[in-house]
Image (tube, rainbow, N blue to C red; front, top):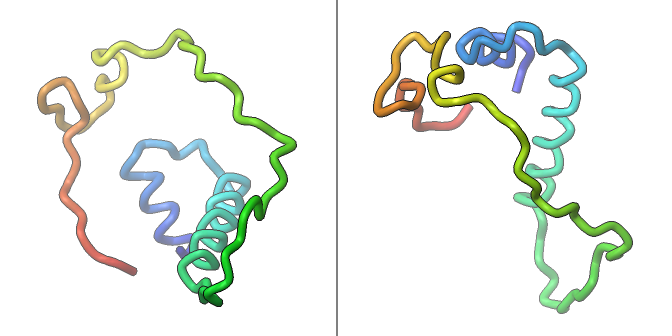
Length: 91
């Protein structure tokens, strides 16, 4: 994703305060996904490819926004959620 597309998405999502640091993290994540997509299976079974040293933390409920607070700045709202345009396609 190029930076112009990224900043257009931030503008649409009203997250203009996110900067280049988040963009770099996003690009890194997209590169990982691309490498998974390009992975060529050799037919050899692999088990425990990643070390299991770190375990995900438990999900614990935290205070969050109400639907009204979350949709307050939305251009349009539908059924208590932010209404967005339907986007189908690739870059």
